[in-house]
Image (cartoon, rainbow, N blue to C red):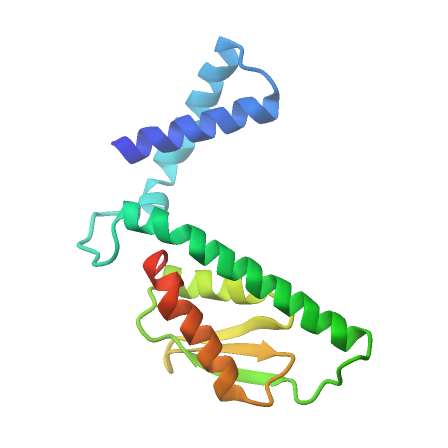
Length: 166
């Protein structure tokens, strides 16, 4: 119930900000729309029936999010630098290619977050997820050492992401 109300309040405030009005009737209309949306998509938003999901608690995830966000920003910065060097012909493209990165213990949400973080960084992007082989296919601008690319992505997951989005 708390998650439902939190979502409705957040959506109502977002509605009011975009409407640029905090008039009581606008808030009532926003709450009605927000409540209907959250109710209609409750299974998607809250995962349907509660499951016993093992993993870090909310407080642990909130604390671990900031280092993870910092690492993602650093990865974006270094990726931008590498792509800029290639674009300016200061560094040659040695061997671009696709690297298979094992999914390991990632949940579907963890796979999605890994794919998003990888794709945000210039120079790498998700091509496909092969659920049968349990690998993510990542294209890298420099795949001359696929083991290094694979280990870099696995290290980021194990060290930072698994504490926030397992």
